[in-house]
Length: 295
Image (cartoon, rainbow, N blue to C red; front, side, top):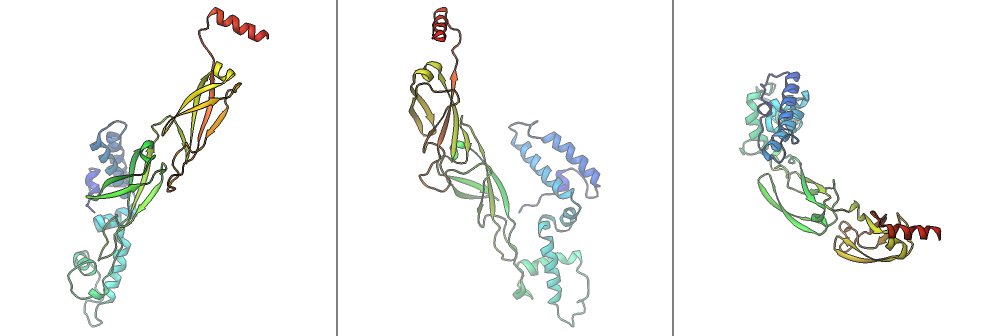
């Protein structure tokens, strides 16, 4: 995982006080906020880095770990346990067995425990699972109406994933072994991918069902007639019954959204009729309505 200098991101020194960190964060967050920098990808990434830096440095415990272990700060507790394990494997007659583990010894310890030199204690090498990654994938509603494939770039590597039809907004899926690399030969972490789906259609979605309002004129509502309804897979002709009331709901079975991981299965489309009252009537039309009212 690439090292990010959080102090440099916030433009503060390593001796900065909690108040200094807070002030620096607020200043930069205002400067690079997406609302003030629309469609600016550089500002968007800068804003994410600023938030990440603040989350670590504003937490005293996390800051202490970060100051000591740098990019590996999330594995601090594992490193501490490994240090203790390393000391236990020293020979009893070793004159240094009670010596404190100093900061200068850390690099040698890291070599022995996590990777690589092939020196003593190799049989006791500790393996650690890699860090899990979290990412968001932004799509339009129509993008998940059918199953599709997409190439993502994660940690400078391209991975090809299948996006099943019917994925919901906010849904998270796990992609195994595509997180951070393991330590000491341990397994990779996993990638947790959250879908952010923008509904760019006139339909309201509730899981696999769709909802829409349809305006019909007063004459069709009273006398009945045929109308055309738009669905996500094309147009459908629908018969309106005579004397249909305002707010009447009808269901088109199987014309909703795909059901997640159920091939060929769809929810329903619910249509609510809104009756339009005619405007700008002529004198003759008004007279006819008056006659109808008397009847």
